[in-house]
Image (cartoon, rainbow, N blue to C red; front, side):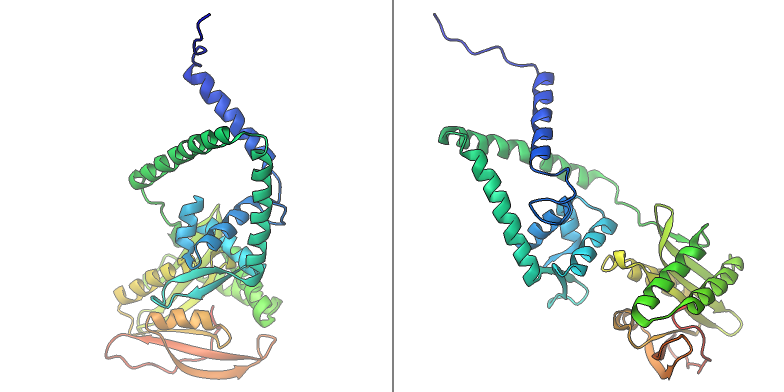
Length: 337
């Protein structure tokens, strides 16, 4: 009796069978569970830990590209891992504008635990296969896994870049969102309470009601209908003076560059309007914000202690001038708002 190969399966049958195997792997490896690899981390967080461990100093942008995540989701994952003490950010020694990601000592322990768990899973599976089948599996899986990677790279080079959802002007719900962002941020860091939130909401609502106006502007970063970052320029055209107000960025967007984009829009606006001076009020405790202000040409002009916000803080006034202009002393107004 002659030996012949069995009839080849149709392409459709092969695809369905591979999809079935893929779903089974996803289930059995635990990707549908709330936590993965015998840890308390979600699957995407586990992958982030592994990638940062493999490439210490990787940027958030490169991490997002590897994980196929957009800027906002990447920033959220990094912020959560940082808050959990698993990841830390460091300023690049080569370029101060670049933030590098590293695993902390705790992060390295988590990575080791994940690696040990995954290694045991694979080892248990390979015990059921003879060496020749193991080699065939590696060759086939390599080809199968590389194919979608190549397709994704090709699609990424032809796809239109994702537009950053920054809007100019009032958007429904933005007043409440911005007041909430301020209340949470300053309550956690400086102990401010209801008085501060009320003042932000009332003054912002009045400002938004005056828009559109030639010497005033409001920029918003909006995601899924919710404002997560804002910045306003409250200008006085006759006096040629502008006040930068309500600059706030949600913690989930830290390191995403959204704050810098908002500042770029605002400084372009004040230069186009030819304001001789742009000033802002903030607090000494907010060092990261100060670095951003100074990067856009603001300098510290005055500092004093106050308790009007419910806690003792050092209030600071920063000013940015057009070349050849002289700053005014100004009067105390709501810091940061």
